[in-house]
Image 1 (cartoon, rainbow, N blue to C red):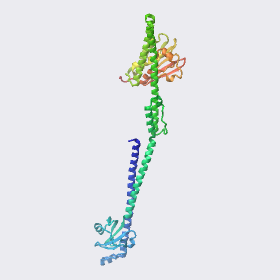
Image 2 (cartoon, one colour):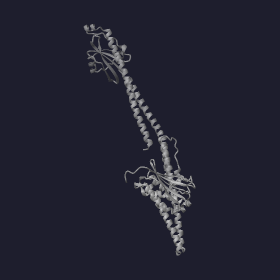
Image 3 (cartoon, one colour):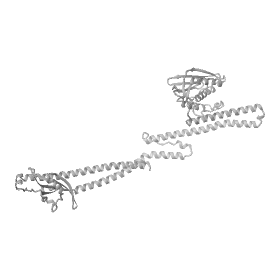
Length: 473
């Protein structure tokens, strides 16, 4: 069952329950009001008959003679039936509108009235529905000389209630039908964006080209629930499109990076087949080139494996790390890497300890140092420093190299991105070092920032949260 149908059923069922309660309440209220009006009428008429008896009869005369004068009661019979019973139960007088008919009184009600109580009851006789009020005829002396019974036909009330019932049933039925139609229309209108989302998702799933990911939903009401759903769906599509484009670029870059060393290897193999293998010098040169290309491919595949593990959520091995000691080790390796071509200096160095993965942090700093040495001309300078700031530990690798163009700065941490592809490839780079470094930094709760001026040098800064380790894991 679709959501549209369920919403319509829920809405209609709720409205039906409300209308049922309202209808029963209205029916009961009107029925009680009409019945109360009838009771007031027959009670008032009975009280009038008793008052008339007291006007036309002297209590002492009645007591002596034992007989009472019975007044005319037709004056009370414009809307009701009136009859008077003696103490023996015989009808001694009745209103002319009764004709030959006698109000079918109940014996228990008659005895209760003789005992001084008023009783209201209903009877059904010969197809007639009558409500009767039975009251004692009590003189001012307190003597009860009979019973007055006032009845009113309930046919009018029954007809009114019958009409009211059908009016309520037909009205409620019509209201429910209209509510169901309106509810279905409103549900369809409200869920139309959801249908559009479904159609778009199906078209994207069935599509064969990347252009399908470029589709976006039109958001008509951005502030309601469906609008936020559509906005989230568009954000998801944008993210998927970016990931798909990154995948395409990754495949293209890896293919390109592997094609170059493979071409070099094939060329040197062909060279060896054509006779270079017989020349010791040419053979050594070809083997050296092939070993360099193999090392480069191995390094690139290792970097790709590491990034794949990072994407899969690999856990770091965290333990207390002395950053000043680690920086000193990196400084010593930097001296070896520079081979005297550039000057490597150790600047300001504070003592600091963090909970981290020592091997990964070393890899991060070596990547930064290697880039700094690689892109600094001979005679330049690379400086390493460690400082503590409020809440952070800052490790800086600064160089006086060629710098980075402003348009390249936002992309230098992207995988396989190079500002100067030909020059980087000739230097043995894979375009993955900075991506790996940024991942390691973020895995430790920090980040890498960079400031650079073209032709003047760059400064890469690793920021790590200054949270002294309290445990070892």
